[in-house]
Image (cartoon, rainbow, N blue to C red; front, side, top):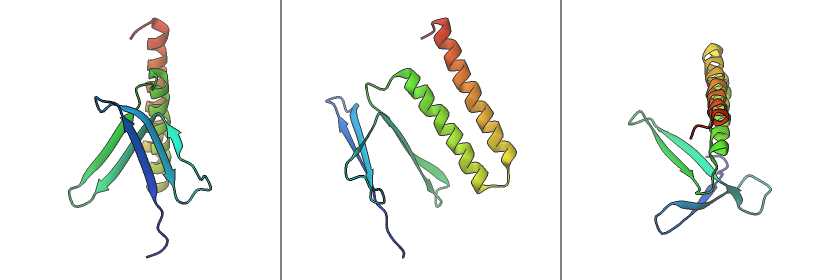
Length: 115
């Protein structure tokens, strides 16, 4: 086996087990401290069960507009990954267009005063 890299995630919870603070670090970075985050999405593929195992967490102070941006950027990077992993560039573009439409609809709701 080659080099092993470690990713560490620490989540501080309140009394109701709601995340208050998320921090992470990776062994292959030059940073010698934990990095702060307000949200995270981690997915693992279980080939034996043919299912995705996911961890989605966000802190109490994660604002809705930040969450919308987080989803938008996540979908855009998923499209980039699909482009690198498959020959189906049209589907990657479909996902990018969906992400753009998702963010526009959110922005329109904010402008209209919807909650």
